[in-house]
Length: 252
Image 1 (spheres, one colour):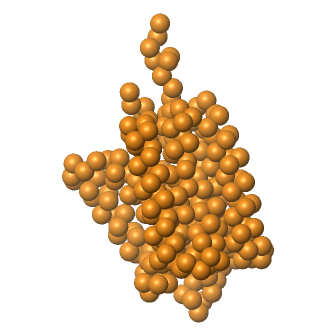
Image 2 (cartoon, rainbow, N blue to C red):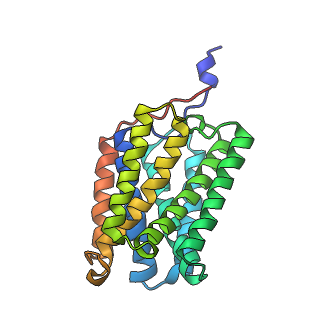
Image 3 (cartoon, helix red, strand yellow):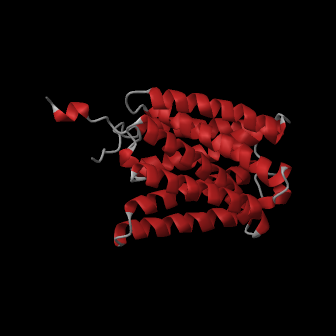
């Protein structure tokens, strides 16, 4: 019997530089796309959350039931998590009135709880172990919480902390550079650093998205949310086409 035949392939892409470029583009698209539905279409945060939550569940179902890693399915699911994360965070922060600080704190607790439960249940939170439906379920719930936290954290940094959109983008970019330096120069767990970087890309994308479409008086470029979303989608699609098609290596 061929032992390798019984080992399921990882369902997530290999983590390369192109992976992070696509991830940042996806998080930026989630911000502009989410705002386009809730603000430009005037549907509101609750309706927007319901719409994107439905899309999220459908794409996760398709992704989990796929037998192998498919770039288009995977990244479509990532975008679904970023859009629902945008509308859900905005709904919690603004409609529920708990503010950016309260929303960020609540979502951080949910994210840590998700990672802890995943680790206690499966023994690892490494993406190289994402090769069973149960592990994938933990993976996507964790990602959804991380995307929602990132949105709230980006808003907190830009507004409550007073850094503005461009200043916040610089702060989060420097934080990502620090994580990269720790990855290459220290023996800190690569799994821990991966999740730190994964979380940080979301607020970076959030503030970049806000910088593109917010009014001039708020420090933005006031671009159309529709045109900005289309341009980002085009960039993301090109990067997916150029990126390596191999999945992350599975650990045993």
